[in-house]
Amino acid sequence: MSYLSKAAEQILRLEESTNERMTSISQTIAEKLKAGGIIHLFGCGHSSLLAQEPYYRAGGLVPVRPIIIEPLMLHHGAVKSSVYEKTSHLVQDHIAEEDVREEDVLIVISTSGRNPAPIDAAKFGRKKCAYVIGMLSMEYASNQPSRHESGKRLEDVVDAVIDTQVPLGDALLKEEGVPTAFAPLSSVVGVALIQDLLAKTVVRLKEMGEVPPVFMSGNLDGVEEHNSKLVERYKHRIEF
Image (cartoon, rainbow, N blue to C red; front, side, top):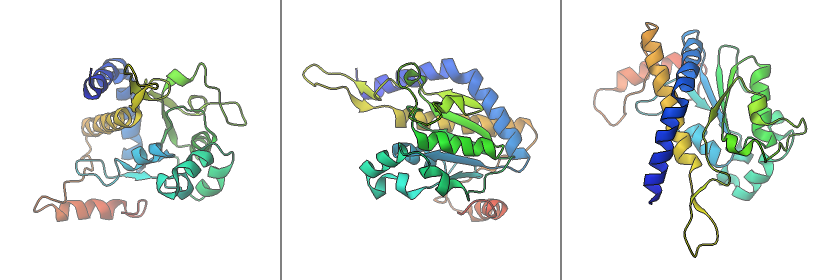
């Protein structure tokens, strides 16, 4: 079976198993946005790419911003990023000045849920009384203990968990004659879940009588005024 077929199967399973939870989480997010909050996303390494994915997107919610900590991003060195993700207290110095508020949402993405950096980011969000969501694979929970000094994993320090159901090791495919599993799944599933969550949030906002703040594609004629008004509305919280 091809990668596309197996990835599609995983997404369909998630549709069945997570729909009710995602709907509930999206309701809370919509309430936060209606109250004037915004959505922050945080991740390390490849998870940092997921945190950036819904930011300033055509067809995407406007009040979305990634928390960017340069040492944890791939372009500063993938090996260094991996080391720093596992380093206790590194995030605390960088994240202390982030403008995360009680009316906000913080989505922390970490496939394993065991490393100090995302756990510390989630703890920071909880300290600020934001609504903190952990996106991780609970496949790791039973046999991959925390590397955090507290002994807690990501699911222990958040308000809500989105389980990606990504297999241990991330790799999706096996082939006779190839000694290791291959073809990572977490990015494809992570993007799908994030966009599903935000799409549900748009619908919840509509049901609450709000006009959902959604960007139109800058590659279409006549959208400049629409997008400019939305940027103006949120520029005091988000750097566009």
